[in-house]
Length: 288
Image (cartoon, rainbow, N blue to C red):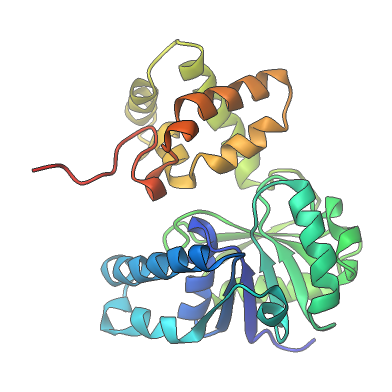
């Protein structure tokens, strides 16, 4: 199998930008794709912020390595040119099955035959998508956690059709970009991380939406009683509320009621999490 040298990341949101930047920081050539110039301008701002963040938080990044990484990132709003020479395509578009399926149908005819396709889906099974890829043997999941430079796990999960050599190549790639690979040996919605995290976050939302406790107090009791550094609503803000909303919207009746609560009280008010400056907490600079 040919080495992975050129990587296309589809999507430039919070985590998607982190994936692209970390990959470039690790020496790979990266094309970051999104659907509009407006989205790409936001991506430029995210990359600039990541240069600052890496300089403060990543050992060795302050000597110019983080800034140099920008030279290895190309931005594109044209899907065909974004994947034309890719060895690996990492799909990280919104967590909606129909959107992902339609994208893979396009990708199948645009990317070179050698390219590996990897979904960063946090809850969907790769088997739900493999028939749309045109290359089920070269398709699998590669799932990252937010704040990728600190919480550096990469879950790798294939299907019954995934070539073992492709699985091994993604394990090696994850290591090459500074991640700790977590092989997931059987398909499971939610992988390892979200099989633990999603029920935890849903339980917190249930407490707040049901009027049992305020989000701040839910976080407080969790931090104090367990010693955890963050509570569930702080984690919601890091993830961004759109992804949990999309997941809940496709759940059972109770999950959908929690989705409606998130939408009415937070999303519709522009409170999307850290990226928007406000979610369950405010991250806007103080007036003084």
